[in-house]
Image (cartoon, rainbow, N blue to C red; front, side, top):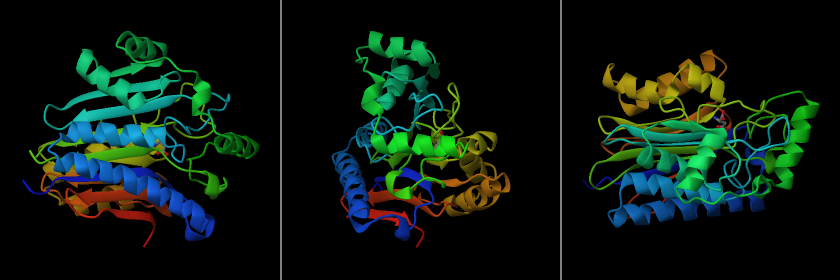
Length: 312
Ligand code: ASP
């Protein structure tokens, strides 16, 4: 197999050239390039798709530009509740955490749930206790806070709105997104990972699509690996990530056709805004979105990476 490839996203929303200064744009491009290149190097070295997507999402969580881990958005009560999921296309095993506030890297906790528990999804305090029992550090939720995100909360509260990290009425220059990664490794295995702070001003206790296998994250070696970003409730109702796989499987659609159907038809029909990244078992990559922009990057092992922010 010579098609080893990784794609990553940093969230979708109302991102236009006019809203980002050149300096801001450069910061995103540098962050996306460095993380996708790390993934490409890992694939080139023969590492597994599962390890590659976990590491890419961990790095995205560490980057304050994106709404996951450090830089996560605030709930209505001014708290942080983080969600993450990882899925292995070989075994169809998945692990996820939702509503966690004290774990620096929710994606590592999701991986622990997948590998060290008989369960798929753990929430809140139970998830945190499980992760700490398995060696993760419990951190103060303050580490996730950034002044930009707090300002977003105040703006959203003022507008009485629950908003995507990139959606109006917020100042786009200070917003960024949910993160995710999908990869095909040299052995032909697929994996997907997604992590998020959710949506600004969400009700405490709200869980979005990101930690739900089939909604915001899905991988199956038989066809495709998918990671989504956007208005989570609609991605849940349409099972968007699994729908891509189902259209390819039952409907024999190509990756591009399945993406067109879900992202450009089915999601907008329910007012769903956002996009997804996907790689199929042949190494074809798709990064469709129906919003104005989506932070994204992809690259084959050994090639130069490609970066995108706006609609072309
Ligand atoms: N899908 C995420 C959620 O609803 C938000 C996002 O992608 O920005 O929690």
